Amino acid sequence: MERPHGVPESTPESSSSRSPSESRSGSSGRVEWVLIFALLTVPMAIVPGGSGGLTLVSLWGFVTLGGDGAVGVGGYPVWAYFLDQPRPFATLPPSIRAWPLAVGFHLIAATSATAGVALGREDRQVTGGLLLLAAAASLWVAVGLGVRFGVGSTAGWLAVLPVGAVATLVVALAGYGRDLYGIAAGPPR
Image (cartoon, rainbow, N blue to C red; front, side, top):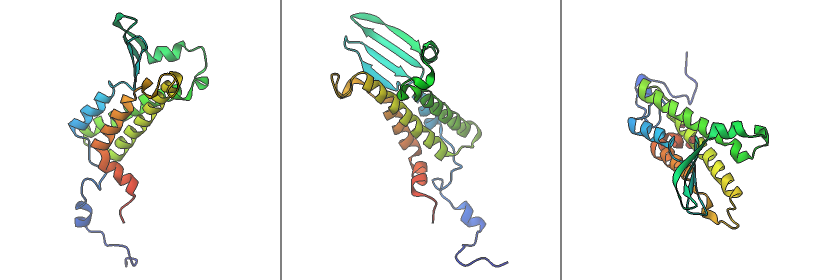
């Protein structure tokens, strides 16, 4: 059977000579894996308090450090926040509804990277894409908090610092940038 005009002949050499960045079957290294798991501890946002305290808004809840001259740490887990709400989930602000998405994207990215390290099977474009989605959801939460805390009016632009979104974006681009570029560039011609 003849090959149609313009279709290159497939040879074993041509399929095995692809660079790792052209193939999605590579797996995360231990450094990338550690960085992804470290993102699970980075606060999505830091909210400076008016009385010298800080509130860390993490994937897992709120942590309050000091404030009003007091020294100490207080916490409020995210699941308690959602369970204590008298309002239905659908009526909460969109940025609060994005919080579970941020948690989910981070956890699925961590699972994907773990599969890459433990089993040697991972689609790096999926892991990198999940990290980008996690960064977007974390940024959405931080911006929503900023709007509620008066960003642009009385508190100024640094009312909420979106450290989680920035850290996740840095890990995504540093660890998976070539793979993500493969998505943006499209299939090879």
